[in-house]
Length: 202
Length: 202
Image (cartoon, rainbow over all chains, first blue to last red; front, side, top):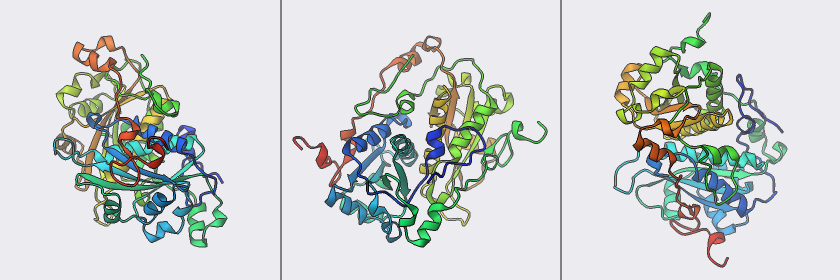
């Protein structure tokens, strides 16, 4: 199944092809693949090169650890994420080494995670990021210290068949991908004002 | 000049090649390129598909708007960013349509910005993200409403010559890119504990 983005302007194939499935194949991932995902995250830019990200990661075959990650998910995500080839938890360093708040911790964890996603896509893998997990349980389970914030959970794997999902999830799996058009979020002279080159007649 | 990442594990060329220069060429960018950057951002994933990002963007030739963006930068960034082919401001929707806080606003603006960076890299462009700008000035200049937070400023353009920079900036332009190794941010059973597959002897 392809859900290639219906793009209005030319974009790179890896960005166009990426989407967030719920159906994963039983095909196994390897630790080498996991390390490439981490390496891609590693080279993301960050404010003052603080690299304010960490990950806890397990392949489905890394049984006890995969289960402990899975147990942190909200029930809705547990309906499908157990079949992923790997589960990860991203963690943002919201306080830096000097004890100062890093306002870019989540932003830069996002930059690193997007690199991870693009790397995965280039290896034929798919990624589904999740905000639906129990942050306090994650903190306790993995002894995450103060100043480090559980950020997102991430399912990675080879694509499965939509037909293998429960009916309600199957519907969302096959629906068209929707985004607001660029005109709705690209502004010029001021908020909500289109840039002059997009204005009618210009 | 190439500053390709010294990667320990295989990563995609676009991720390896990307870095954040301060020296930009006078070669002009086009509005079509700017729209491809926005289109790439558009297709990023986001929590509940909220797409909590907006951008204000100008090419160097879009004179008054480019200047108003430039004026929001901190003096240190003004030393070099005026030669960029385009300047952008990313804005995160920290409050959603129902008036609830979106804890993923910065994270997802980061996901979108990373897509923008990879798209730029694929078009031969370079990107330098900046936290060093005057947020209140940006808010006033562009009449950014409450619940929308100036996030990062972004310089984009073709690569210039390090020799064209002042000496102190030239040094940072040519220095080796540094990252902590994957072992420093990938954990297993608990915080600071390496995953079992990375432990010695396993």
